[in-house]
Amino acid sequence: MNTTAKIKKFVILGILFLLPIIAYLFFSSGINHFAKLPILTKNVLEIDQFKTENGASKLLKDHITILCFFGNNLELSKANAFNLAHKIYKKNYQFKDFQFVILTPDGSQFQVKSLKEELSEIENAVNWNFVYSSPNEIEKVFNSLGSNYSLDANMASPYVFIIDKDRSLRGRDDDDDLGLLYGFDSSDYSEVNNKMSDDVRVILAEYRLALKKYNSKREI
Image (cartoon, rainbow, N blue to C red; front, side, top):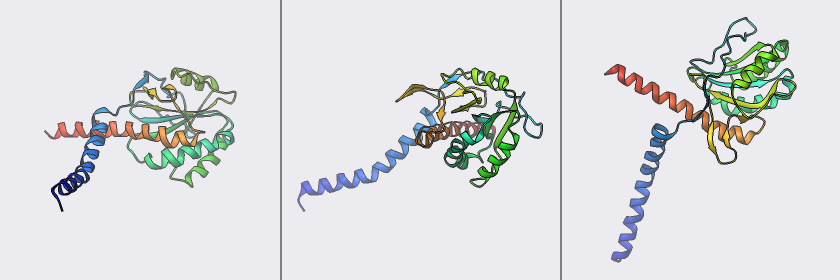
Protein backbone atom coordinates (compact mmCIF):
# COMPACT_ATOMS: atom_id res chain seq x y z
CA MET A 1 0.00 0.00 0.00
CA ASN A 2 1.52 3.34 -1.00
CA THR A 3 1.77 6.39 1.26
CA THR A 4 -1.20 8.20 -0.31
CA ALA A 5 -3.48 5.21 0.21
CA LYS A 6 -2.37 4.88 3.83
CA ILE A 7 -3.11 8.55 4.48
CA LYS A 8 -6.59 8.22 2.93
CA LYS A 9 -7.24 5.14 5.06
CA PHE A 10 -6.30 6.92 8.30
CA VAL A 11 -8.33 10.01 7.33
CA ILE A 12 -11.43 7.89 6.72
CA LEU A 13 -10.96 5.97 9.98
CA GLY A 14 -10.49 9.24 11.83
CA ILE A 15 -13.69 10.68 10.38
CA LEU A 16 -15.65 7.54 11.23
CA PHE A 17 -14.34 7.67 14.79
CA LEU A 18 -14.88 11.38 15.38
CA LEU A 19 -18.22 11.86 13.61
CA PRO A 20 -20.41 10.21 16.29
CA ILE A 21 -18.63 12.17 19.03
CA ILE A 22 -19.09 15.48 17.19
CA ALA A 23 -22.75 14.69 16.53
CA TYR A 24 -23.33 13.86 20.20
CA LEU A 25 -21.66 17.07 21.38
CA PHE A 26 -23.64 19.11 18.87
CA PHE A 27 -27.05 17.75 19.84
CA SER A 28 -26.39 17.72 23.58
CA SER A 29 -25.17 21.30 23.52
CA GLY A 30 -28.19 22.24 21.43
CA ILE A 31 -30.58 20.89 24.04
CA ASN A 32 -28.66 22.26 26.99
CA HIS A 33 -27.80 25.70 25.70
CA PHE A 34 -29.85 26.69 22.68
CA ALA A 35 -33.14 24.79 22.55
CA LYS A 36 -35.74 26.89 24.31
CA LEU A 37 -39.22 27.58 23.04
CA PRO A 38 -39.99 31.28 22.66
CA ILE A 39 -42.64 32.88 24.86
CA LEU A 40 -45.36 34.26 22.61
CA THR A 41 -47.95 35.36 25.20
CA LYS A 42 -47.58 35.92 28.94
CA ASN A 43 -50.23 35.64 31.64
CA VAL A 44 -52.63 33.24 29.97
CA LEU A 45 -55.83 33.36 32.00
CA GLU A 46 -55.88 30.87 34.89
CA ILE A 47 -58.56 28.19 34.70
CA ASP A 48 -59.55 27.90 38.38
CA GLN A 49 -63.15 28.78 37.46
CA PHE A 50 -63.42 25.47 35.57
CA LYS A 51 -64.30 22.28 37.43
CA THR A 52 -63.87 18.59 36.74
CA GLU A 53 -66.83 16.20 36.84
CA ASN A 54 -66.00 15.75 40.53
CA GLY A 55 -65.99 19.49 41.27
CA ALA A 56 -62.20 19.77 41.56
CA SER A 57 -60.05 22.50 40.03
CA LYS A 58 -57.09 22.17 37.70
CA LEU A 59 -54.49 24.90 37.33
CA LEU A 60 -52.08 26.00 34.62
CA LYS A 61 -49.65 27.44 37.17
CA ASP A 62 -46.76 25.09 38.01
CA HIS A 63 -47.71 22.64 35.25
CA ILE A 64 -46.63 22.05 31.69
CA THR A 65 -50.00 21.95 29.97
CA ILE A 66 -51.27 20.95 26.57
CA LEU A 67 -54.39 23.14 26.41
CA CYS A 68 -57.19 21.92 24.14
CA PHE A 69 -60.62 23.10 23.03
CA PHE A 70 -62.66 20.11 21.82
CA GLY A 71 -66.06 21.87 21.95
CA ASN A 72 -69.51 20.48 22.68
CA ASN A 73 -69.54 17.87 19.89
CA LEU A 74 -66.70 15.55 20.80
CA GLU A 75 -67.38 13.23 17.91
CA LEU A 76 -65.96 15.95 15.65
CA SER A 77 -62.79 16.20 17.76
CA LYS A 78 -62.26 12.47 18.33
CA ALA A 79 -59.72 12.00 15.54
CA ASN A 80 -57.74 15.00 16.84
CA ALA A 81 -57.72 13.51 20.34
CA PHE A 82 -56.44 10.19 18.99
CA ASN A 83 -53.61 11.94 17.10
CA LEU A 84 -52.56 13.65 20.34
CA ALA A 85 -52.93 10.47 22.38
CA HIS A 86 -50.68 8.44 20.10
CA LYS A 87 -47.97 11.00 19.33
CA ILE A 88 -47.84 13.29 22.40
CA TYR A 89 -49.69 11.96 25.42
CA LYS A 90 -48.51 8.35 25.28
CA LYS A 91 -44.82 9.33 25.27
CA ASN A 92 -44.98 12.07 27.89
CA TYR A 93 -47.90 11.66 30.30
CA GLN A 94 -45.72 10.27 33.10
CA PHE A 95 -43.45 13.34 33.13
CA LYS A 96 -43.90 15.14 36.45
CA ASP A 97 -46.26 18.14 36.24
CA PHE A 98 -47.21 17.39 32.62
CA GLN A 99 -50.93 17.44 31.86
CA PHE A 100 -53.53 17.68 29.14
CA VAL A 101 -56.37 20.08 29.94
CA ILE A 102 -59.47 20.28 27.77
CA LEU A 103 -61.80 23.22 28.37
CA THR A 104 -65.27 21.82 27.78
CA PRO A 105 -68.76 23.38 27.77
CA ASP A 106 -71.10 22.31 30.57
CA GLY A 107 -73.41 19.52 29.48
CA SER A 108 -70.75 17.52 27.66
CA GLN A 109 -70.01 15.17 30.55
CA PHE A 110 -71.57 12.07 29.00
CA GLN A 111 -69.66 12.55 25.75
CA VAL A 112 -66.44 13.03 27.71
CA LYS A 113 -66.94 9.79 29.62
CA SER A 114 -67.24 7.88 26.36
CA LEU A 115 -64.20 9.56 24.82
CA LYS A 116 -62.03 8.94 27.90
CA GLU A 117 -62.90 5.25 27.76
CA GLU A 118 -61.62 5.13 24.20
CA LEU A 119 -58.51 7.13 25.07
CA SER A 120 -57.75 4.74 27.93
CA GLU A 121 -57.45 1.94 25.36
CA ILE A 122 -54.43 3.79 23.96
CA GLU A 123 -52.82 4.68 27.30
CA ASN A 124 -53.75 5.31 30.93
CA ALA A 125 -55.97 8.42 30.72
CA VAL A 126 -55.05 9.75 34.17
CA ASN A 127 -53.68 13.04 32.82
CA TRP A 128 -56.48 13.76 30.37
CA ASN A 129 -58.24 16.47 32.39
CA PHE A 130 -61.62 17.60 31.05
CA VAL A 131 -62.87 20.64 32.93
CA TYR A 132 -66.22 22.38 32.50
CA SER A 133 -67.60 25.88 32.44
CA SER A 134 -69.72 28.16 30.28
CA PRO A 135 -68.93 29.02 26.64
CA ASN A 136 -68.23 32.58 27.79
CA GLU A 137 -65.49 31.41 30.19
CA ILE A 138 -63.97 29.18 27.51
CA GLU A 139 -63.83 32.11 25.10
CA LYS A 140 -62.12 34.31 27.71
CA VAL A 141 -59.31 31.79 28.17
CA PHE A 142 -58.98 31.26 24.43
CA ASN A 143 -58.74 35.00 23.77
CA SER A 144 -56.09 35.39 26.49
CA LEU A 145 -53.78 33.23 24.37
CA GLY A 146 -53.45 36.14 21.96
CA SER A 147 -53.30 33.80 18.98
CA ASN A 148 -54.47 34.39 15.44
CA TYR A 149 -56.98 31.52 15.65
CA SER A 150 -60.65 31.51 16.62
CA LEU A 151 -63.19 29.14 18.16
CA ASP A 152 -65.95 27.75 15.97
CA ALA A 153 -69.69 27.71 16.75
CA ASN A 154 -69.22 24.58 18.91
CA MET A 155 -66.57 26.33 21.06
CA ALA A 156 -63.96 24.08 19.45
CA SER A 157 -60.62 24.58 17.76
CA PRO A 158 -58.30 22.01 16.18
CA TYR A 159 -55.37 24.02 17.54
CA VAL A 160 -53.75 22.96 20.81
CA PHE A 161 -51.30 25.01 22.84
CA ILE A 162 -48.23 24.52 25.03
CA ILE A 163 -48.51 26.49 28.28
CA ASP A 164 -45.51 26.58 30.62
CA LYS A 165 -45.40 26.61 34.41
CA ASP A 166 -45.62 30.41 34.52
CA ARG A 167 -48.81 30.44 32.41
CA SER A 168 -46.97 31.62 29.31
CA LEU A 169 -47.84 30.38 25.84
CA ARG A 170 -44.84 28.78 24.17
CA GLY A 171 -44.54 28.41 20.42
CA ARG A 172 -42.39 29.36 17.44
CA ASP A 173 -41.49 32.84 16.25
CA ASP A 174 -39.50 31.61 13.25
CA ASP A 175 -41.51 28.70 11.90
CA ASP A 176 -40.48 27.82 8.34
CA ASP A 177 -44.08 27.77 7.12
CA LEU A 178 -45.93 30.38 9.18
CA GLY A 179 -43.41 32.55 10.97
CA LEU A 180 -45.42 32.82 14.19
CA LEU A 181 -46.77 29.47 15.31
CA TYR A 182 -49.05 29.85 18.34
CA GLY A 183 -50.50 26.36 18.38
CA PHE A 184 -50.51 23.05 16.57
CA ASP A 185 -53.25 21.75 14.29
CA SER A 186 -54.22 18.48 15.99
CA SER A 187 -56.18 17.40 12.89
CA ASP A 188 -52.90 17.33 10.95
CA TYR A 189 -51.13 14.08 11.89
CA SER A 190 -47.86 15.21 10.31
CA GLU A 191 -47.81 18.48 12.26
CA VAL A 192 -48.50 16.69 15.54
CA ASN A 193 -45.90 14.02 14.80
CA ASN A 194 -43.20 16.45 13.75
CA LYS A 195 -43.50 20.07 14.89
CA MET A 196 -45.53 19.50 18.05
CA SER A 197 -43.63 16.41 19.13
CA ASP A 198 -40.34 18.27 18.72
CA ASP A 199 -41.53 21.30 20.68
CA VAL A 200 -42.92 19.23 23.55
CA ARG A 201 -39.59 17.41 23.72
CA VAL A 202 -37.77 20.75 23.85
CA ILE A 203 -39.84 22.21 26.68
CA LEU A 204 -39.60 19.02 28.75
CA ALA A 205 -35.83 18.98 28.22
CA GLU A 206 -35.75 22.62 29.33
CA TYR A 207 -37.45 21.78 32.62
CA ARG A 208 -35.35 18.65 33.13
CA LEU A 209 -32.22 20.78 32.78
CA ALA A 210 -33.59 23.42 35.17
CA LEU A 211 -34.40 20.71 37.72
CA LYS A 212 -30.95 19.16 37.31
CA LYS A 213 -29.27 22.53 37.92
CA TYR A 214 -31.48 23.16 40.95
CA ASN A 215 -30.63 19.79 42.47
CA SER A 216 -26.92 20.33 41.80
CA LYS A 217 -26.98 23.66 43.66
CA ARG A 218 -28.76 22.05 46.62
CA GLU A 219 -26.04 19.39 46.83
CA ILE A 220 -23.22 21.94 46.96
